[in-house]
Length: 172
Image 1 (cartoon, rainbow, N blue to C red):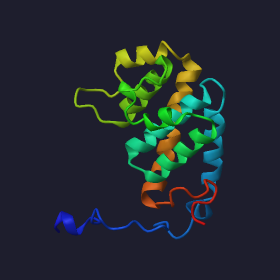
Image 2: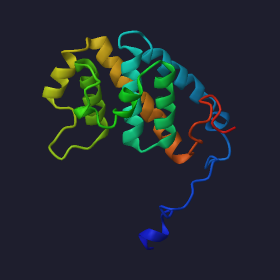
Image 3: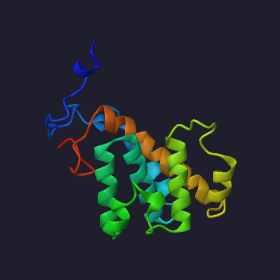
């Protein structure tokens, strides 16, 4: 089959309805328990909430999920983050709006979620840099924050909830 017949034309409008008709939480209610546990774990106070939000926004961008990108952008706005910081997450390496610990966290999410042509994704040097800014509990919390977005990535990419709708009911 020709690749062009397998994809949506770039100029086609994307419908404002989810791909999957029923909310996955209705089908598998245990998702709520896992989600709540992850939110509690990442909100343990060892890493600033703003850093968690930046990491999760970047993870959504890397995953290519409009839903997750819009969701985490909204969370950051609601938390009072500046438009400059939010808009420059995608280009964080050359942005002046991030602290050294935030840069380390953003480098970590990039390394975890992007394949490396040069060997392991999280090098010893990167680990040492991140560990220089975060103690073991905070580093574990960052790992969970990245994993939290990955937990929702499959739902976001397969079921395609509508971007911009309520976080609690994107199927409405």
